[in-house]
Length: 342
Image (tube, rainbow, N blue to C red; front, side):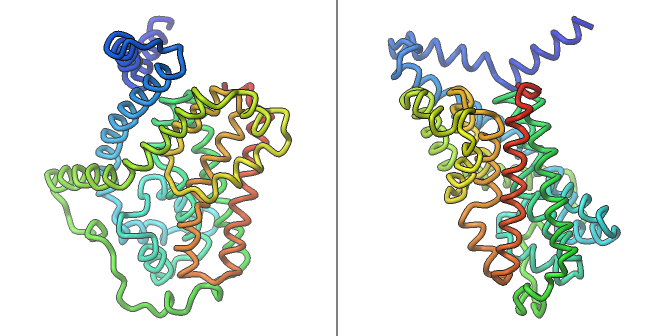
């Protein structure tokens, strides 16, 4: 049993956390740049280069694999799958499908319109919409590469619960009248090329996966650089006592502050991971850090503005309130039981 455990630990450290890459970057910084990695400048360069390279390698591999899987779940097929279920089971399926079918690159609005026009319950649609940006298969691997598998799985489970409960509440409130009329009357729904349910060959799926890698990397590279840059700043330049005073375990408002700070930001989980890593290194509780990440991915101002185009203010406020409350509860619960996650 110990042999199997040692093999799994080795594979996790070398292939997921890429400790070999960290050792290589350390040698480059120390011998190539002649800097001490324990110093501010050397440590900053080491953190920046290691995180940038690791995230891009993992991201490229994961996008390829997940996009290949997504090629089996175009929007039309997704609507048909969800439409076979009723009640909370439909919310569960909607949330689960959101993890393997994140919003296609064209935008979230055509998907929202398509789901509503197809006759799917509004609550089920929102379970999908909450889950899709908040949780995906890549987030599990990336979180595990930064923290550990316990935290990664806990993040995904909580994200799914927020999506399921949030969608269920919205469904029970019968808020269909707060969807903009043009959505219900839309007759020509534009969807991206990946939405057609044509039979694809394995070559087609591989080409689609490659295209998605290039397209998504083009869209997120800047946010990753910014995220790693902020993480480097927090990790090596901002005094720990300042971070702890604002977001430390003794500050009862730390989760609320982290959530509020995350909302105006525009990034995805890939851009927030380096910041989260630096915050945990500085002593910020895991619940506070995960609240920040969820607020950025699920409640960013650009996504709220985009959603406002298709729903009325009352529905938008209810959606925002439900997700915010879910994130806050999650943050405080995780902080209380943090000893089980680390």
